Image (cartoon, rainbow, N blue to C red; front, side, top):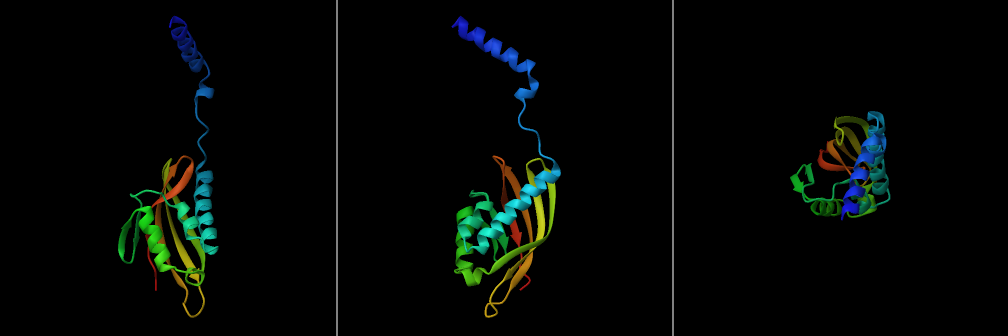
Length: 156
C-alpha cells in the first residue's frame, strides 16, 4: 500500500514538471474551425447528392434534443427529422442535387458556431427546383461538428 502511495505521489509530481505533456492538443485556429464546419456541410451535401439521406443526417446531432424548424414548425429529435426528410424526399428525383452557397460561419464559443447560408436543390423540370435560406447552430462533440438546431425556409 505504501508503495502504491509513493508511486502515485511520484507520478503526480512528474505531471507537474511536464505541463506541455499534461495539456491537451492545441486549440485549432478560428479559420481551421471554420474549415472543419464547412467540411461537415460539404460532406452532408455529397451524401444528399448520392441519394443517401441517412448519410446526410450524420451531420446532425443524434439526440432527441435536435431541433429542425421548417415551414410546418419545429420537429424535435434526430429520428423524427430523418423520417421527415425521407417522407418529403422519397426518391433521387425528389432529392435533386443540393448546393450550399453564401456560407457565413460565426464562432460563438470554442465548441459552438452558427452558419447562415443559401441552399438550392436542382431537380427535374416536372418537380421544379427548390431553394431558400438556413440558420444552423452547430456544436462540437468529440472533435466532430454536428448541427444541433436547423432553421430552414423555402422561397417556394
